[in-house]
Length: 343
Image (tube, rainbow, N blue to C red; front, top):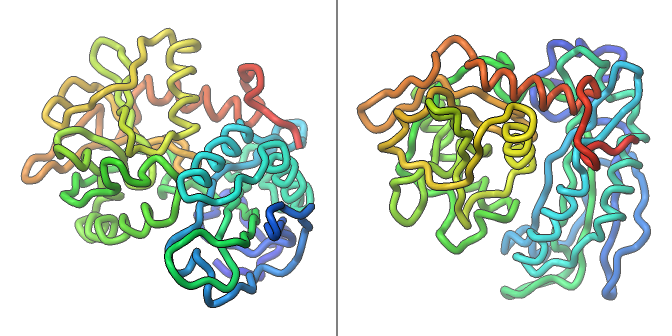
């Protein structure tokens, strides 16, 4: 995908998940103990010191969220205050100044509004992906927090994260760990993802969509599916998702937990998902902002291959959850109070 594309030249129904340079991004600087007002800029290049802590010590965090075009042509955000709260937790874990929640949401609204023509049309299956981030910058050396930071948010139109959209794909259970037991697994920081590149590459080389990570302490429980959260539906209709201090608290996952209980009348639970007990699940999937819901057809566990509902068909409960969630995001289904913010 070229970065000099214009909205009028895009085939909205054939978008992949790749970088496209849009018109504006929001940038705010932290200096002398406070954030400035921030501004929109056309410059997609950051100019930072060679001593920036983001470059040397991984002092940075980010978020992933989307804007959606509705049937009446308006634009809406899905639970942006939850992204603001999660970024706050990531900042606190890495000793970075928090970008205030209200200011965060206003910045997101500004950058989406400024790039309004890049928001894909309703019904195309594509969305506007939003990437806010904070990095430690300035002239530093030595392992300590920076004195200066940059908050920025940029956007781009995207299609499905996994090719083919809502169809099952297979995953490989890896021996690698995604995060340490008391490390940064629950914060959305770059180091977690850098460590996942090698196991992800090895899984793809074996024709799997990505790697599935087990808990780092015992390697007996499912934690995450690539960069997404795991969920399963048992044969007696319990919707369960793993609970661990090293799992990223996914906004999509908590939304699905609420929808499963309140809209589909399922029993729900956050708890242990033991890898040797996965035959209890009639359906399974991965969920996250980028992936939305990716049904899991089968899991390769050492020499054994376990199929859930089907390698080719989406399970009925997963399909209902997907339709409910995407319906809310695109304005076709009534949203719970506070979930939608209009741009």
